[in-house]
Image (cartoon, rainbow, N blue to C red; front, side, top):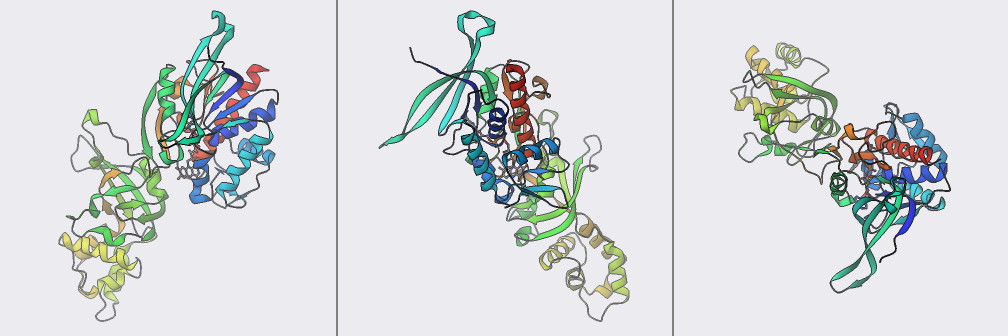
Length: 436
Ligand SMILES: Cc1cc2nc3c(=O)[nH]c(=O)nc-3n(C[C@H](O)[C@H](O)[C@H](O)COP(=O)(O)OP(=O)(O)OC[C@H]3O[C@@H](n4cnc5c(N)ncnc54)[C@H](O)[C@@H]3O)c2cc1C
């Protein structure tokens, strides 16, 4: 019979919430033995990539902001806060934050097993007494030794009184998050709301080779604007309802649109296939001149134009050259004025057409980019099955579910990491309270 080592708490996943939970547990209850099992060769792989390597750790308006800042102050992370509320490590280095958490975990005596993938969790009773119910956690470890066919894996098990499932969602699978937690949770009796990638760029049909004009020349350009997501009304063909709007920097890529305002928009692009809905029900409008009325401006320039001034040149006083060219190509493709038309020759109708395009340049989403490009997961373990006060499962006592694994997602700006820290700390405190 294989001998199974016992540890008070097993944490599955050494990412943001797992590390926060481990550190908090050992700080508040040094007598607890805590083991983190991490699939990757080091903890905090995703954390190191956050905020484009700068790690936007929290936000002054995030839920639990004060608690989170107290935690970081206790472990010695110095932070800086920008006027817009975004908080970063003072060094603006995501690796520094990840290294600090790993170092504190080590100093506090957390046992960390890396290159180890949890494959199953069971709850069984020793001697059939409910009081003796324990978790058994199976995992495979990649051994250091390698054969010609690759690394050898060994199958191992741990037993524990508590388990914190902190293995993240599916966004960024290259950082170890491949959705293992959903299967493990289902096997333990939990319901999983279908996970979908969010905070990700959008591919649009305007970039397709058959689209005239093709927007590919916009690739690499950024512009400040207001984006609005509209969804078609099923009972009124041709009419749309605005469902999300945000001011920000729109980034054009080689396949479509990106940028934080676009990422945030993807959280609202839910549709129900069973009701005949699809992604083509959505359009994205960009107001490229939200600070004024382009029609007033064009009328003024028409009436006071320098002789021979081209419409394209006038538009370039408001928009970047390639964006102005794309807008005029788009309107001329629908019988608007040709780009080379002189501004003094613009009719009121021409000006209205250009106005519609500048204040509502329209893109048609074809695909929301997948898991590799996504920064978060929408969906996950049903929140109806988790106690929000403690993060404890309402299905399996002693099981805690933290971070992105649960059906909870937030916009960009430090809110997703805030959720990870806060739920990790909350679960740790709940265990301390329960055991004490
Ligand atoms: C590129 C990128 C940039 C981002 N930038 C920001 C940002 O600046 N600010 C912000 O608030 N949010 C950001 N996010 C989102 C944020 O990183 C996540 O929401 C957060 O890390 C989730 O924390 P977590 O603890 O739930 O999971 P994770 O941090 O993803 O950690 C889960 C861990 O579990 C491990 N694991 C998975 N399965 C197993 C298994 N079977 N056995 C053992 N271990 C396992 C994984 O390897 C991983 O290390 C970003 C995300 C990405 C992808």
